[in-house]
Length: 288
Image 1 (cartoon, rainbow, N blue to C red):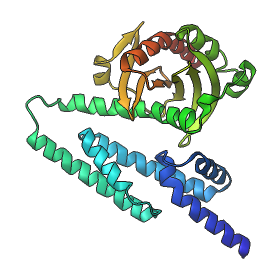
Image 2 (image 1 turned 90 degrees about the vertical axis):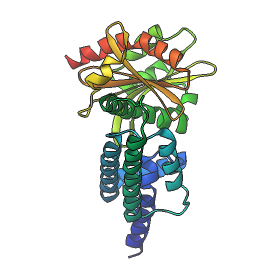
Image 3 (image 1 turned 135 degrees about the vertical axis):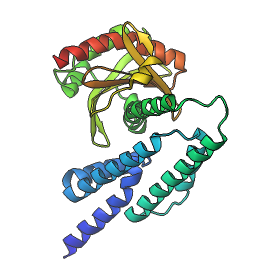
Image 4 (image 1 turned 180 degrees about the vertical axis):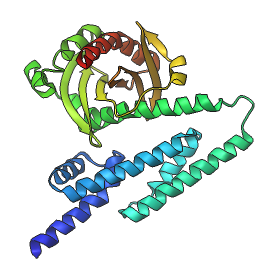
């Protein structure tokens, strides 16, 4: 009975962290605690997957239209004001309320919109592009920054072992195409919110850059977005500033790839332009 009671209390504790875990708001030690627990607890793993699905559905509903950035910031700030743990039922109500507020605000913006308002199809393309680029930003933030992997330095043998023979050749390719002052210090496989990535971290004395690659899960940049994309040797580049990170993304048939840093847009795009053609060709060969 005591063991069962302990397990129930541990599950209750972990489940109180799940929403913050999905939002990448936990301390590194707590993230590790959550990951270790869900690896061995199917019930909590299912709860995490369920909340991730709900969060994705809510995000997609909101991203159908784009509210002003200052409004999104105020809503997020209000939701996070309470320091008390939030139960699943409360979380769902809060999330639903946020959707209502966002949709209502979008209606107001439409009603009072200026003559220079962005056409609906362009706004939808911009929102969808930002959503896809956020995938790469999340992995960079979670892995390189929050888990401080950017301060590590793996040997070539360690990178080859962690990435596997399929992706080991990326290290030499990226170092050849990156600016001379940058060095690949980490190459490994990682996960964020259950999504696997191949992740390379480049560093000079001041800046950390991630090249994050993940297999598509039905996603792709839209034709509307491609019309406004930058071009690098036949590769379409999509760019956005997200949470103080500059994210430049591109795609192949089966993969999404992202270059993420806190550099100015022009510099991040320049580095992505150097990397994208070679990485595109590398991934295309894997696709067969």
